[in-house]
Image 1 (tube, rainbow, N blue to C red):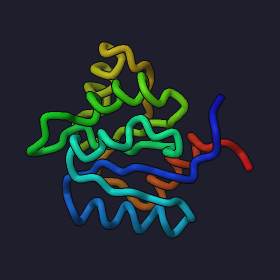
Image 2: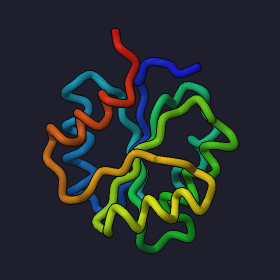
Image 3: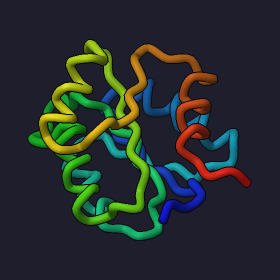
Image 4: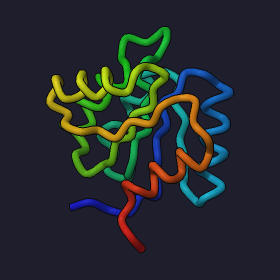
Length: 128
């Protein structure tokens, strides 16, 4: 059963992009924890209080990318929503996600506007 999105973990290795995304999300009332590496996000994967993960597909200087983390989330926190963000071709990322058994993960292309990010999160949220 899905739940309302209140707490979000954001995986973004670019500090400016992370700061802006957090600003956009917190301005709409979401509580956001920012992680800069895949390893940083691992401590949050099994946390039942995290409602959503926003994961950059490609993380520099990390042995875990966004899709690797998404696989772990599906195993340990299947109630949590997952939104992928990427500067790569969306179709390629979607294909790789399906090949990994992740189904049709929502993917937001970079660069994105604040409205695009908020709309993508709200689309995965339950109605009030």
